Image 1 (cartoon, rainbow, N blue to C red):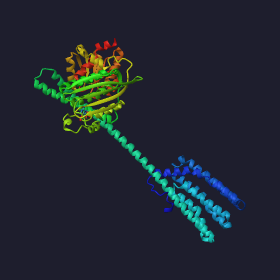
Image 2: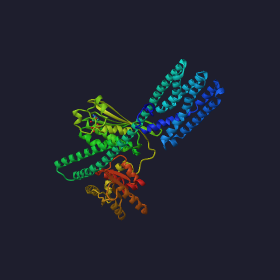
Image 3: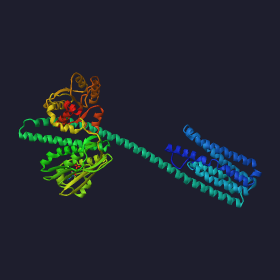
Image 4: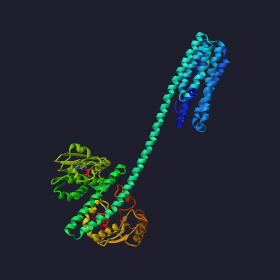
Length: 606
Ligand code: ADP
């Protein structure tokens, strides 16, 4: 029957049924004993105590029993409901019906006994009032509250309308109107309750769907990251061969037109490498996987390196290049020098790219020193083509370049500044730009880093290597174990090493490298990481184990195409000593060999 429908909404969502019944159970204790004091009060102010004391005591007792049982049912909801929801609902309905029936039967009995006297009217009024209160607590289940209201009122309304005198018929009508009103009000409460329940359920479902979607996006991003790592490895390995062998050929005797062509090949290879690096960095940033490393470095040395890297291009474009370090400019800092260098190299290469026969200045300034922290700024200032105020707004966005033929002609991915901004952000710094069209641009990064208290000497700082780069000749006679599965790469590295008169032993995989290591007496190991049979990490572990017997530690340098953020740290954590990325740069290789050569190590121990 529609009138006794459990609720106004469909039951396609079983969880909502549970929630509605739980709410019913929760609301119950609040009204379970409401009848008891009221019944006592009615007995006291009417002649029930004289005429119907026994019946009155029986009614009050039944109210107490039904109240106790309702509380019992609501307390045990969590334990009993799930075992058999139907049984719980039936029991609850029965106990509600019991209290309703007490009224439903008492009122007609009272009427037949003594007519519509004062006691009857008081009982009728109290009953109707109480029903209104009960409707609120029963509203989560429409069928239940309707049943309750009808069982209480319908018998007496029918009797009054059918058998009563005019006055009693009026009383019956009044009660009927009140009953209908309570039913409407209860329906309204019911609707509010269920729409709230449905909204909450929808929200929960949406939150779950969002969570699922975000997990899927995360997984897709991870897959993208892994794909990029692998593809970068695949691209870098042949590129390593192309660049390295080109450099080797360029080092030898060549016709001038051959040299020019080969230089172009080399230049194109380098720009391809630059693009791969930018794409990799950007994807890492997007995936939130870019983290900063922290080690002691010399800030002025880093700036010198940046200037050095741009000097050739500057000369080519007829630009003057200056470095200006302000008073008390900090020296030893703790931070990610590699990323600072990357940011500045990018700003410098843009400055060089967009300036002809002008001036480029790299300006370092101390901002302030507070409790071991140093705030400083580094500005790259050029007198080039400049950028309009509108374009200044967009160039920090990924893949955005100034939309004009002049700048488009210079190439680039439009990722450089976006990467710079993210990297500066990861260091809690800021990057600003001031520029005037046709006058020049000024990019400034503001960073705050801890100042190193300890001297940054020892083989792990880049400066020692640079300072000792001229010692390249002293590599002569050094014994190096080269672990590399790719034949072209191995050939290239061997040629570079042999040029410095280094004696090279080649192992094709990690397992072979361990055997060779134990057999030989090496000054250094160049270890590829991704290899068949046993990878570089596994081989390093085995070598370190073998070293325990001799107590001698041989420097092991990772040689890998994984030029991704954090990989260097991964190598250091795996007990390797340093990290070189492919494509192998002969200069970087030589510098690293010098840095870890027995002679420099001996010097730094002194
Ligand atoms: P791209 O790899 O294309 O150089 P960037 O993000 O480094 O990407 O730079 C975005 C654009 O900002 C450049 O294409 C150029 O239009 C503009 N830009 C950057 N630096 C300068 C500069 N120093 N002078 C003039 N324009 C610049």
